[in-house]
Length: 118
Length: 106
Image 1 (cartoon, rainbow over the protein chains, first blue to last red):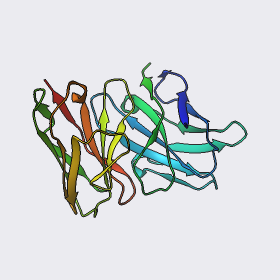
Image 2: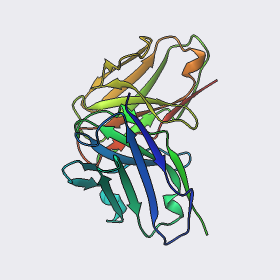
Image 3: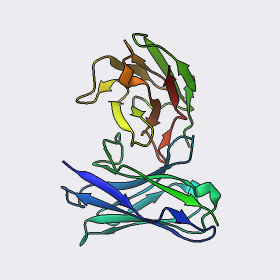
């Protein structure tokens, strides 16, 4: 059974860079569209972007080019970097996987709360 | 971006009730719609994909219908485990977008 596990700092200062990693177990990093989503407190989900094992990426334009999603095949994990964060970036961050880019999300991490505060 | 609007935002209900949640897309998404259940502190769980297909392992009291811009999720007889937040998701086009959620509460 494929499992995803997010990790990273729970507190980030405004203007700094948020960095999260998602470890993939029981599946190869290849063949999936590895995705990051987030959910601000008491709000709906927001899709942030994905990376495919080929290296291709797709990001939500709402992030104004602040996000970078990358793969580390040697560690079977992928990462999110979001720079110039503000309090509006406070959210539960989820990693997820898709076998095709046009599909429902069956594979989710448990989520990790990131708070942006000085 | 395709906007997904759910109603109601909160749905008071009791065990045994039949409940229906609506989701409207700002433009046609054919049947590229999914429904999820989410409980506090947990990741979303897929219930329905392609507008009306029940995900494996999901109880048959969950059903859904719709196409184009209008969709519904129905729980035929609400069980105690069903009190949760439900939201829709369109995967017709990028950026992927989600509804704001419907909280089914006692």
